[in-house]
Image (cartoon, rainbow over all chains, first blue to last red):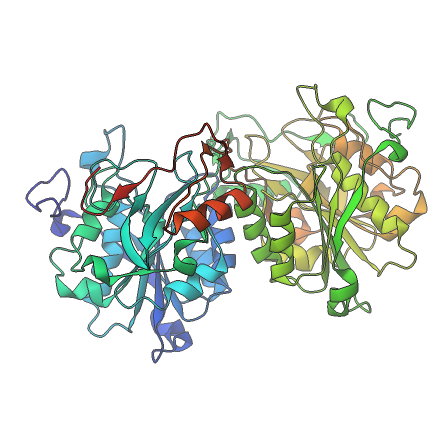
Length: 306
Length: 306
């Protein structure tokens, strides 16, 4: 059972969620999709931070190797980021950029249900399409690392596929356990009485799965139980689970985590050098904050040995 | 001046350095190089850690977009890693895999000169070739993030090129300062009385620069002064510096840092499930350590709600 929609704390109704389109490149780039073959729906929640531009660039350059996909990039923000939009435009991958901020009700919580609004917004967008192309949905956070073989593999998903994830929560992995090719259990550093003790990066579903019980398909706002709640809402049996990554003996996705530091604050640099434009670029990409009170950018002339 | 070679502490002589080839795929993949155009010599020091397989995969998939390059992957290790070798073989990028461990003299130091042995080994390898193809050398650590535009740009380097690096040491950037197109200084979070207050990822050199004064070209074993010592050993004038990344107004490389955690220790899993093979894979790729004393892999059966 997914948490009741009446429980505002775990599952605010969609009517209360703020969702907004930034730019839907599908009409323009949709011709890049071969709708006669399964399309990959890659869903990436993201939020503004000093490292965001680097992580999205890195992920985009991985996805640039993957054909026949739509990239859903959904920001935890109330305004569309021009940096994210510029970056997405440049790569010419068919994409949908949306906003779906964390509801304010959770803002005071110490453990925030991160990525939930964003993934739910993508699901609702897909369900709202009158005739979406056949394909496979995968939740790909922007700081993880993906072996290209993963994308080939998940495209074959008929109902639901599962596979190992490396570097989970300070331990080594999260993985389904298979015996004679059938799912018999899970190996995970934390079980938490979950029916599906799995990592967000460890499964993919055919988008037909969303349409069987559209009212039940949603991720709950419960830290630690997002995957479990989502999977419980899908209509599948244990026998439906398809084991990927060479029968779950390989690791083709890793939960890498980038060290985050807050962006430093500097004064606007009025300058007759490149620092004038560089400052704007650093500000645009979130590496710097501007304030009249901050220090000037550090500078040292050649041969000065500061 | 680079530190004297007599000073064993900062610059052990090459005779004392342990350097060993693991596998040189150049004879086999060299046909992929177009020697009539500048070749990129990408030098990546690496060391074994839980996150290494993910970082090398991510970097390899970025470099897979880059044509006409040789990838030097040099391990801080005394034995060639089969995992690194397998990974390099798979991508079909022309590569050289070598060992060049940190000399033991530095092993007790709190701030270790990381990557120095490895970069020096690559330089010596290039200098040892009788007729290396024309091209450009770039030091690309395995945890950084590279915008593909960087590689197009550095290939034009005639002598030495410089460009901004983002996310440097908790601050925003390290960059040359240019006025009317000429280098006039540097902006960096730490100057340290360096002639070249720059980041390792912020410059590229034409490999002809190595051959002018081969005895002087080496990176010193001085934490914080590796770049400075190396650049001082090259024979160039301020006027020789070529500003890249749209006249140093863009950031196309970021010093991202992945959170490192030590690999957990588990007992060898004798099992009739996929965990038997998965354990071997996790061990092979460094995500797990094996010990008879460790706990078994955590397991929970389906419908058990552990």
